[in-house]
Length: 307
Figure 1 (tube, rainbow, N blue to C red):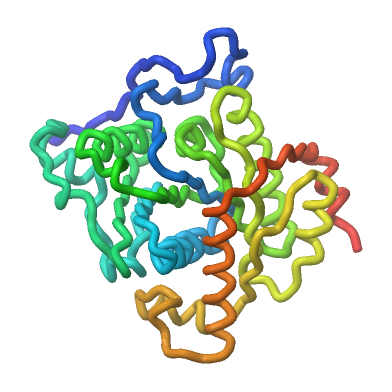
Figure 2 (figure 1 turned 45 degrees about the vertical axis):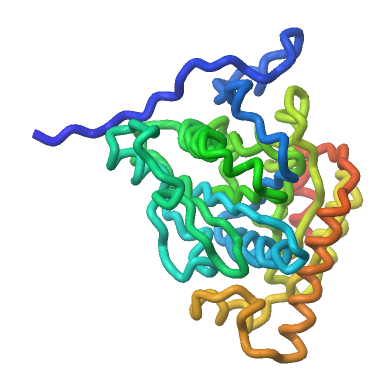
């Protein structure tokens, strides 16, 4: 009879200050071990509504950083493990896959078992996820960071980008926020995307009480206009860092398993490439932390629900 592995999050020492209030106020949160911090690279966590284009944004941002001469590591944090496929041209095995193959004896793994080189030298890792209903996403992310540290890969990296599953803000899938310096939110100019952004702002604000994560800004994606995004940003205290319209060349890049920097040249493509390079340069130079205050659900419904 087959058995199912149940992934249990270990009880680990929190990196929070001893006098800090409980993380999450009334919820069970995943706490990263103090020795799993990433302090040798600029670390960004990319969030946004499911299907908004976080993987496209993350992969092209990774490519843009690499074009600026930075050593980049992208970590996909989604069980469907497709964050990096435009960089690697394949669905690479996940960290959980390779750990299972050695019965979770991580000392038996080699770097090439879970790290794959993609476009322009971008290093790619897919954390994957536990089987549905059997574990915590925070454990998966924690094991990934642990492996990277054990193999000293983070010491040779300038930029780490976490591409995070959908708009899930539970303790497990919020765990990249424990490692990142800046949280970036990808959104479109519509109600559902901005509603999800508001909840992500609340999650980042909660984590910022005990960890170094701060809001870095908003990336408008798949939108001809940004008026509703900008109106919301002005009220809550966010700012837009970049704007990527809903262009066919972006859709085709996914179908071709390519970054935008590999597509055939055109004026509109060059404009998008330049916007990604400007975004990467802005993030590398450093963004001021944003002290945004999210709206209550009813407030944002009224704010966005009428012409």
